[in-house]
Image 1 (cartoon, helix red, strand yellow):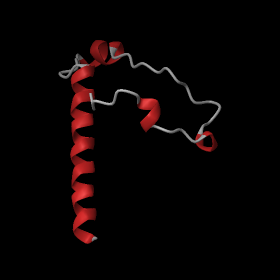
Image 2 (tube, helix red, strand yellow):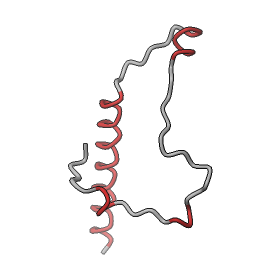
Image 3 (cartoon, helix red, strand yellow):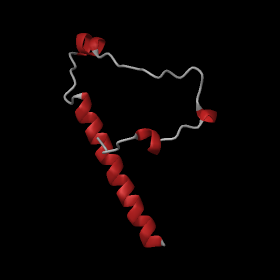
Length: 71
């Protein structure tokens, strides 16, 4: 979504902050929410990812502009 071709070049993980109990593959299941509350999501997962990435990119742009003004 962000146009990153090789995320391994951009994202670095520090093993000091990794916990042995961390799961690498988690998935939600809204079945109970649908059964009990009658709730269904209005936004599909890919759309949610797009919204979140756009928000992060906008925030990064604002932070870069603020940093440039203060320099």
